[in-house]
Image 1 (cartoon, one colour):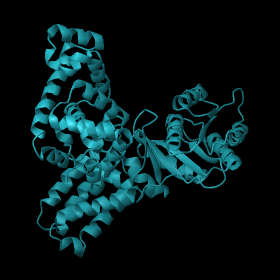
Image 2 (tube, helix red, strand yellow):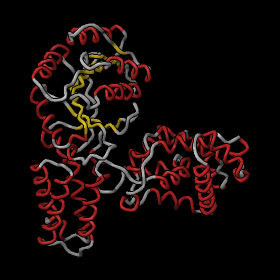
Image 3 (tube, rainbow, N blue to C red):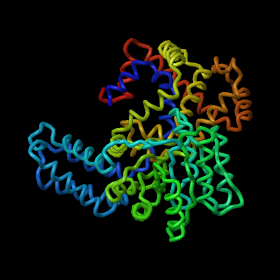
Image 4 (cartoon, rainbow, N blue to C red):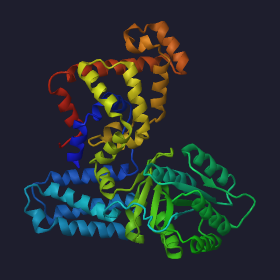
Amino acid sequence: MYGNALRFRRQRALPAWAGVRVWVAGCLGRFFVFQELQDRLEGTLRNLRGNARLSEENMTDAMREIRRALLAADVEVSVAKSFVASVKDRALGEDVLKSLSPGQQVVKVVHEELVALLGHSAQDLDLQGDPPSVVLVMGLQGSGKTTFSAKLALYLKEKGRRPMLAACDLQRPAAIDQLEVLAESIGLPVYTQRGTEDVVAVAKAARQAARDQLCDVLIVDTAGRLQIDESLMEQLSELEAAIKPSEKLLVLDAMTGQEAVSIASTFNDRIGVTGSVLTKLDGDARGGAALSLVHITGKPIKFAGVGEKVTDLELFHPDRVAGRILGMGDMMSLIEKAQENVDEEQAAEMEAKFRRAEFTFEDFLDQLRQVKKMGSLKSIMGMLPGMNPKMLKQVNVDDKQLSRTEAIICSMTPHERRRPEILNGRRRKRIANGSGTHVADVNRLLKQYKDMKKMMKTLSKPGALDRFGKGLFPGM
C-alpha cells in the first residue's frame, strides 16, 4: 500500500494541495462512522503492544474488551463471539507467541480477521450478458435508494458505460421528480411514466427504451416502505421475475444498526440479493451493520455512500475499511481521489512555488477548489493516518468551511490576493461584508495563511519537503 503512496508522492500530485491539507487539519477533527469502535480497539491493542510477552491471561482480558467494543458498536452477538474466538485462537498460536513483537502480530491478526469479516476483497458489479444489463435497487423507504441510483449511474458513466435510470417508485410522492432532477444533474437519461401503478410494465418499457437509446445498463429505482410488508415483497418478486436483473442491490442505512441485518436477511430470502449498499457511512452511526452483514447474509457489501453529493460513492474495500477502524488510515482511497482530481501540470507548478515559499491566496483558492472535488472534508480526514481522535474530538467538522473560505478569498481583489500584507482594517471589513462573513473570520484566515508561509519557509530548505511528505505517509 505504502509503495503506491510513495510513487504517487514522486509524481508530485500531493504537494499541490499540501498547504491546504495543513489548513484543513487545523480546522477539523477526525470523523468516521466507526469512531467509537476505533477508540476502544485502539486502547485495547495499545495495551497489548506494551506487553513484552503474550499470555492466556492478558489475551483473555484483551479479547473481553474487544468483544465489549464490538457489542457497543451494535455488532450482532454471534458475529462478535465468532470474531473474538478466531482472533484469540490465531493470536495464541506458536508463530505469534515466538515473534519478536507479539503485540504487533496481534494487531495484524485483528486486521486480517476484520478484513475477512467485512468480505475479504472489493467486489464490483457483475454486468455480463446482453445489454442492457439491469440493476435492481431495493430497500426500505428513507434508506437512500433514489440518491444511490443516481450515484451508481454517475459511477458507471465515469467508467465508460452508458447507463439509463428507470423511475419505478410509483408510490412515494415526488420520487419521479427527484430522480429526474438527479439524472439531469449528471447528464444521463431517465425513463418515467406518470399516471400508472403498473411497475412491471414501466420496467419493461424502460428496458426497451434503454435498448433503443443504446444504453448498456438500466438502473431500476423501486419503491420502499417504512417497514417490510407482504405487498412490498410481492411487488419486488414480480419485478425481479419480469426483468431478470444482473444485480439485485439492497440499500441499507448504516444508522439502522442491527436491524439492517434482519432487513437484509429478509430481502435475501425473498428476492435473493447479490450485494448490499451502506449509505450514510460518513455519519455517526456505530457501524455494527457493516461488521455483521457479510457474516449473516453471505453476500458482499459492494458500495458505500460517504456523503450527500452524487460523487460521494465508493466501492467498498474491506481491507481499507479495516485499516480505518484500527486507526491506520485509508491512504489508497485518498490517493485515488487525489489522482482523479489533481491536475498534474498545476501540481508541478504549485510544488515549485511551495519550495520557493511563494504560495499566494490565488494559489490557495485553486487548491481549495481541487480539495472540494475530492469529496467531503469528513471523508478526507477519515482517510488520513495518524490523526489522534482524542485530541480533535471536540472540534466541529464543518464542510461549509471550505465554501466560506472560498467566499472570503473571492471577495479580495487580485492585488490583495497576491499581497495580503496590505489588508488593513478597512479592507478586511469590506471583504467580510462581501463574503457574508465576519471580520474575525477574515482575520482567522489571514493568521492561518501566515502560519503556512512560515511553514513553507522551513520546508524550502533542502530535503525538508521530502521529510514533510514522509510525515504525511507514516511508515514509508
